Image 1 (cartoon, rainbow, N blue to C red):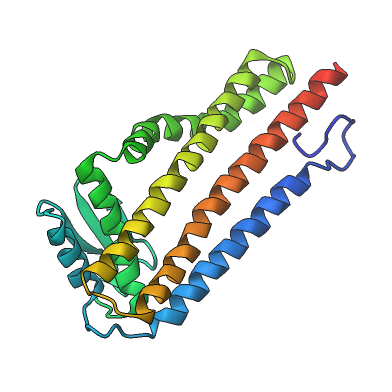
Image 2: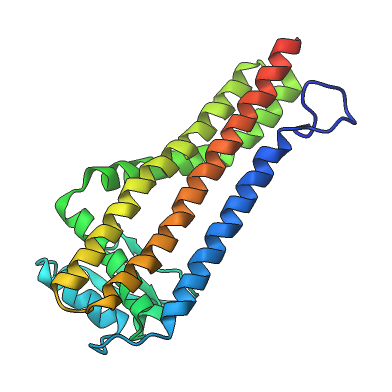
Length: 239
């Protein structure tokens, strides 16, 4: 039904371009982060520290001793979990002495530091998680059911769109959280002497590429929301 805007079945929906643009943006971002990480994955840091060792040193430098550092499976699956207070590092980061690995580990430590000091955007994002999980699962079913029952202007459709809006809000709140964590990581790696000279710039490139994936996710969500508004706005005007 979403493939036909303002016409009967059998006509091309021009808003599909918004979806395609989002896909292209996401693919470019993923390609950049994979390529940049791989490029500096072969560059061994001068200190010879592993990602796990660098993470421990960074946390201790900030007086944080209640956060565990754990290895997890997968590639680029690194994350900080505020519920368990754990910095979870993928195998390619935990044991590696590369500039890429240390940069990624430091970024996750940046989140632990945010949590430790009560960084407001991080807390806001955490508070949105259950609502966004609920909304993301129900938004599309509500839109579909609402349209079939009451048409484009039905209350159920509007509720579904508002739920999807929460997903967009979450993506936007995520941006300052991720950028701040990367900024902390680069500054501390330099200040603590874990990376030297050009290594700091190389790490900045790795984290900058990673940040683009969050920008891409936000852009894709915004484009999808715009498509919903155009689709149902157009149908409402035709009624």
